[in-house]
Image (cartoon, rainbow, N blue to C red):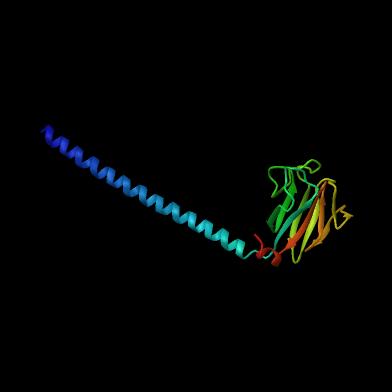
Length: 156
């Protein structure tokens, strides 16, 4: 009698672990498919992005940021030294949230945040200004060049 009970227990454990292994494989496949769809959607949205821009650091930086550093962004970006900024410039003289950039048809709309010192092509910005491809933006002590759309695709 005891031997039969052990046999039943052995078969139950065997099938339990086989079912558990099948469930684990199934969940892994489902999660992999979900991740694939997320990555596919992200790549699709980046490829279809109408307004793509980047800022290239020209000068004014110390050893924290290298000249020539590129900061690409889609549609909107906040420039500043804070951790939540899309264009993070950890530099003395750059406020935590310094400016908001909005990429539009062939230009970038520049809006300083709370009276931050910013200029576009040498002209101080009080409310809002437009920067075009090749324009120079001064954020505190840093000078950045705007690069729009087509000029970005061939660069790394």
